[in-house]
Amino acid sequence: MKFSIIIILLAGSVLSMGRQIERIWTDDQGRNTKAMLLRVENGNAILQLPNGKESPFPIAKLSKDDQLWIQNYSQEPAKGAPAEDNKLNFEDPWPEQVKFKGDPEIATAKEDKDTKQFVYESANYRYNCDVRLGASVVKGFAVLFETTHQFVRELPLSVNGGAKKDGKYEIFLFENANDYHSAGGPPGSAGVYIGGKNIVMVPLTSLGVKKAGTGYVMDREKSSKTLPHELVHQLTPHPYYAEGSMGWFTEGLAEYVAVTPYFSSGMFNVRGNAKSIVEYATAYGKDGTGGRGLGEKIKLGPLKNFMLQSYTSFTGNAQVNYGCGMLITNYFFHMDREKDGVRIKKFLKALREGKQGEAALEVLLDGQTWLELEKDITKAYTSKGVKFTFTE
Image (cartoon, rainbow, N blue to C red; front, side, top):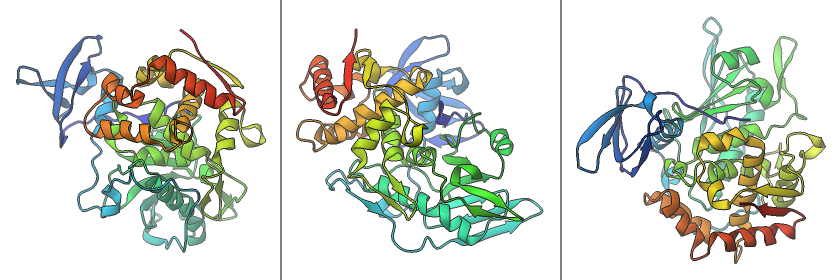
């Protein structure tokens, strides 16, 4: 999918940012100013300038990247959320296999055929559907949702973001593609995360749910990498969307989870995902569909430029950038130095402390030059049959 996050502008609301971060802001005319975001109020970003003066600025007149940053940064963990949703787990071991155990325990919260509102719930998710679904069908796809949630939370990267509504993450399901698109789903997409509302929207076909007579059944042969990708975005904490991370890391992480082999019984085989990641980036995935198709010789510009490019630029060349983002993210997870992910964890901790852009990437370099890092990535992937070339 070309665009995984849709911008929904805040209007008529007051939103506190909590811990403020100073950054460079750009308006729609390309003019820059350094300021601290204090809050969002009635469609304006209330900025504190270096002289201490507060200045309201219309969000609609900010650059698209700044609008997107506000939407993601505004997603605070829900008040009263379970402790496990907010904890940092950088010291945990990397999972080798993630398996969902037990019954997803589906509850029916509402069924109203007149208003076409059918609401079902599992442990962490609320499914708002426009058609009635049987409990067995909901259980069928709820296992994927709950297993993905478990996988993301177990990654020792402190992916503890997202805001719940009444204790659940909100999912909106649509019987047909037209209704999905009318609600804001991008044409040609199989699912989407809308950052401003912190919801995921999905047509039922993407979940392997198909019409059978007067009801619906699960198509066990149907699989989708799009859904886990979007669920990762829903759970990603707002500091990870900062400049220098938004794009290569946020999309790379989502691709990493989505490409990890999943079994419908509710299991991700993390230990066996290296081959799948390379195949998905270089070819077109299993059965010749869905991959990025970059080939085994990949040319990319300077790594620094790749990591610092705007999100608009990143999504503008989705096949190359998403594929390379996944490979580079995977390098830092499993191939860098002692293969223990130390540098990427330092980088994420720096983002949480308010660093961004080149300052955050200096932490990631950890004493290396950009040229040295490019050579290390090239060397690591050469052993996997992939030749990276970072060109000027």
